[in-house]
Length: 154
Image: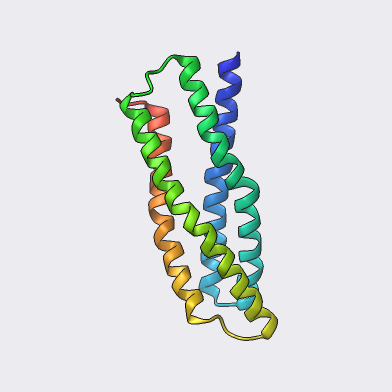
């Protein structure tokens, strides 16, 4: 029963982690495509909040529940699927940390531009391109991690 509860928490937190990431990226992307400064300011504000509430907390819960399930199930820590999952998780995290910083800066620039009734500065759009560039490998890493968790191929 303990394993089932931990597995449920692991799956639930992965759903929040991945779902928040996809949802935030979707709305942030299309708010930016609209070029509506006020919409961008509102969306960026809530994307930052979602990252702190959901992504940060589940990013901690994922390895905690994962390592505990490994322990409970008796899987060798050096199993290839576990090692690949951990490596990809580190890559996704390495992409996410600068994304959080970028989102905070983008939120602040968008809020200022909305208050002033002006345009977003070129730096905003540079940060947005970096944000997208970092989001792609993080997304792909999580897709592969999901497959590894389900298939346990190696």
